[in-house]
Each structure stands twice: as C-alpha cells, then as structure tokens.
Image (cartoon, rainbow, N blue to C red):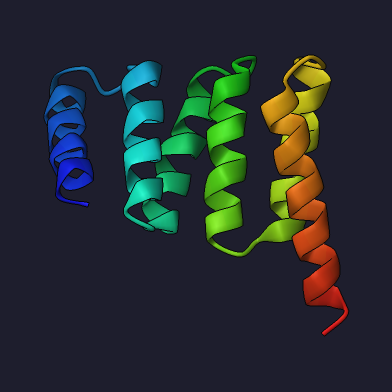
Length: 109
C-alpha cells in the first residue's frame, strides 16, 4: 500500500509538468485502484478518455474504476466498448463478464 501511495505521489509530480500525459494518468489511475480509491482512479481514467478517445487502455482503466465504485452497469458498458475496440482483449472480456455478473447480483438482491 505504501508503494502505491509513493507511485501516486511520483505520478502527481510528473503530471504537474506534463498534465496531458496519458500513460502517466493511466498509471496513476491504476495506483489509485490498488489503494481502493475509486473516485480518484475514475477521475484520471476519464481524463485519459477525454484526451485520447481512441485509446482502449483509458477505457479499460475507467471500467476498473467504475467497478471499484460499484457502478457495475456503467463498468459493463465501458468494458463492452473496450472489447469492441480490441476484440482479442481477453482481460477486457473477462472484466465485462465479471461486471455483468456483479450487476446481476446487485439487481437480484
């Protein structure tokens, strides 16, 4: 956990100089996910998507962040977009199935 906080701090300092670096935003989004900070992760992922709307990795990070925020319907929708962009992306397909399953569980409570 301490390592991930150090990573967030590092990426934040890099972003101060390069605020539109998608790779750094995606990496900080992932570090936030490891810290279970869904809203912060989602904010970085949304920036990625806005800066590079054709970059599947940004959408993937967004789906993961939405899942962390328990927004399963939105997560499934975003993972479906990743699968549409990259049909061979088995990881995204798996996350799509997981998000749909979690959504079903929530709906059936």
